[in-house]
Amino acid sequence: MCGIVFLRLLKPPEYYAEKYGTSHYALKKIYLMMQKQFNRGQDGAGVANVKLNAPVGRRFVSRVRSVGPGATDKVFREIDDMMAKALESHPKKNTDVAWLQENVEFTGEVWLGHLRYGTYGGSNVDCCHPQMRSNNWKSRTVVLAGNFNLTNVEELLDNLVKIGQHPVEKSDTVILMEKISHCLDEENDSLFKSYKATGITNPQLSEIVARDIDVQKILQQAAVDWDGGYVIAGLIGNGDGFVMRDPCGIRPAFWYADDEVVCVCSERPPIQTAFNTPEDNIQEIMPGHALVVKRSGVMSQCLFRAASSRASCSFERIYFSRGSDSAIYMERKQLGRALIPSILKVVGSDLRDVVFSYIPNTAESAFMGLVEGLTEYLDEQKRKTILSMCQNGGLDEHSLAQVMAQKVRMEKVAVKDTKLRTFINEDSSRDELVGHVYDVTYGVVREHVDTLVVLDDSIVRGNTLKKSIISKLSGLQPKRIVVVSSAPQIRYPDCYGIDMAILGDFIAFQAAVQLLRNSGQAGLLDKVYQMAKQEELKPRALVRNVVKEIYKPFTSEQIAEEIARKSLSEEVTTEVKVIYQSIEGLASALPNHSGMWYFNGDYPTPGGNQVANRSFINYIEGRSQRAY
Image (cartoon, rainbow, N blue to C red; front, side, top):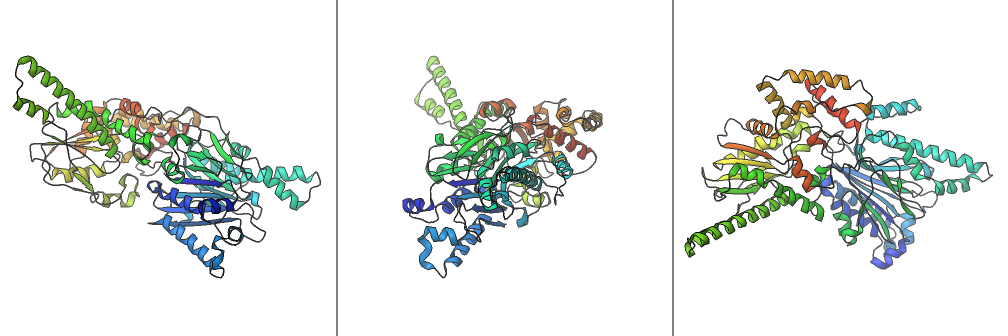
C-alpha cells in the first residue's frame, strides 16, 4: 500500500512566480501532498520531474529517492542541496525563473512523487519508486510509480520472454516497466517509420514523434493481460503524463484540475489542503481509465481496458486512508454504530457497569460513532423509564436524578507508545514488537465490577490482541473484556496491495482449523487441499476459491468464540469475548466500496481465486510464504 502524487503545471513558470511569489511553486505543492500522505508510506520516498523545454546537453528528467525514517524529508533536503549548489555562484538568480529552468534540476513542469510502504521485497533505495528507464530519445524515456500488486507475475514474465526480452527481476514493478517500455518503443518505431517515409529529417522527426505519441494506445496494449489492483502513474520524457486505475477500481486515485494545474493523489484530503478546494471539485479516476495529460497540456480521461464490476477496497476505508476525508470519517462512524446490537447482546441493556474504550488510533472515528449510537440508545431507555414512572406515579426528584445521571462511560484505556503497524510489518520483526505497542491507563476501571469494551479497527493475525492488548487490559482486572472489531473476520489473503498474504497467519483461519479438529471434521482440510490442487489445473478465468469450504461448517459467532480462546495467554484469567463486524454491517456503512474479498472470499479478479487456493496449498504443505 503506497501513495502517489502527480502534478502538471499548465501555465508558464513565470506565471506562478508572479502570482504566488515563489520560483518553486510546484516543489512546495509536491512536498505538501506527500507529507499529507505520510500514512501511506514511511519506508521510502522519491520524486521525479520532467522539463518540457530542456536545452540540448541538459538533463530533461531528474529523480531523487531515499529510504528509511524521514525518507520524504531526505528527498527534499537533497533537492534543496542541489538547488543551493547550483546557485552558489549565481546567488541573485534564485528568482530568475528562466535561468532556473535552464540551469537547475527540479524546476520542470511535470512531477511525480511516491511514498513506499515496504511490506514485501527489499529495503534498499533501488526498490523505491519512481522507477526509470532512461534513453537519449525523450519519447522513449519512462518514469513509473504506483500503488499496485499483480497476481499473475509468472504469466507476464513468460510473455515478455516470448517477445525476446530478458527481465532482470521477477517482480511486478520490473515487469510493468518492461511491458510499458516495450509498447512505448513500438509506438515510437511505428511513428518514426510512418513519418520517415514522407521525407522528414531526423531532428524534425524526433519532435513530431514526441508530439504524436498515443498514450491511450500504449496503455491498452500494455495492460491487456494484467490481473491485480493498481494505480500506476507515469511520465514520458517528452512531457506526456498519465495515471491509470485498474478495471475494478480496487486501488484509489483522485484528481483535480483547474486552469493552472492537473493533480492526482491516492487520497482526496491532500489535494483539498494543497489547493484549498472543496471536495466536490475532486473526482475519482474511473476504473479501467487513465487520466492523460499531453505535452500540450490537453487533459483527457480515456479507457484503456473495459471496466469490471466495481470492487473498491473496503480496507482502505476501514483502516488505511486518512480519516480526515469527510466520507471516510462518516463511514467509520457508521461502522461503530453498526456494532451496537452485537455489543448489547453480550453486555446487556444496563450500561452502568460497562466502560467503553478504543485501541488508538484509527479506531477513534468508529468509536465516536459507537458512543453516539449508545448515547441515543441510552436516551431512549431514559425516555421509556421516565414515561413508565409518570404512568405509575413513581416519578420524584430523586428517581429522576438517578435516571438522568446514567451515561455512556468512556475512557482512554489503551495508549499507543510506538507508531507501529504490526499487521503489515516485516514478518521477521513483528513478534518482538507487538508486546510493546500499548500501555494502559490505571484507575479508571473498577476491579472485578466493570466490563471493559474496547474497539479496534481490525483483528488480522491476533498477535497484538494476544501479546499486547488482552495481556495489558487484563492487568486492570475488569470483570470481563469484550474486544470489538469494526471490520469483519479477515479470512482470506489480500493480493492487491494490502500485504495480508499468508493464510496460515490469520487468526480467523487458525480458529476455523481448530474447530474442524475439535469437531472431528479435520478430514475437510485434506479434501479442500485436493480441490485446490485440481483448481490449479484450470484456466485462470475458471478457477474457484475453494478455501470458502473451510468456514462453511461454522457460524461467525463460533469462529469468534474460538478466536477469543486462542487469544488468551496462560496468565490471563479474565473472561474474554470477541465481537466482529458483520458483512451486512460493513456493506451498509460502505455502500460504495464493495471490495470485501479478504472477508468473504469473493475476489474481483480470477487471479485472486488462484492466490487463495495457492495460499491454502502452501499452508498444508508447510510453506509460510506469499502465494503470488
